[in-house]
Image (cartoon, rainbow, N blue to C red; front, side, top):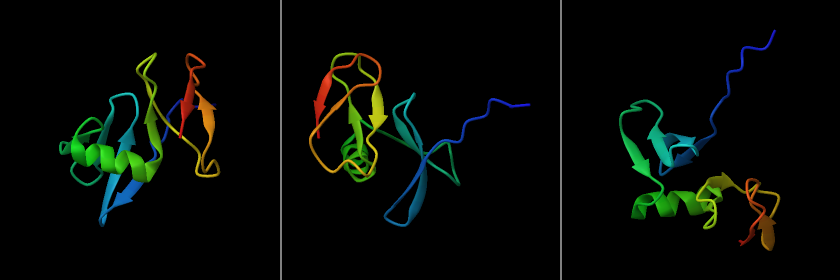
Amino acid sequence: MTTGYKILPHINFEGTDYTIDLKLGEFRNTEMPYMNIAFDSQAGQDMCECANIVHCLDCRIWFMIPSSIESGEVRCGCCGQHIVI
């Protein structure tokens, strides 16, 4: 039987482990989850670049680009809009 739990991805940024919450658009310090960094902030933008997180301007969702894709165009999984990385 499946419990339905999902494990959120993590990133180690400058020696601190952060949980990536794409739905809320923030990085949360894994040890102190009440401390968060919004993707829209300056620090959040730097972290998004390291984690390959992009924002679809049409449907306004955040998603991660697999590290196997280095450059080129990808499509948003929600609306199909082309996103250049």
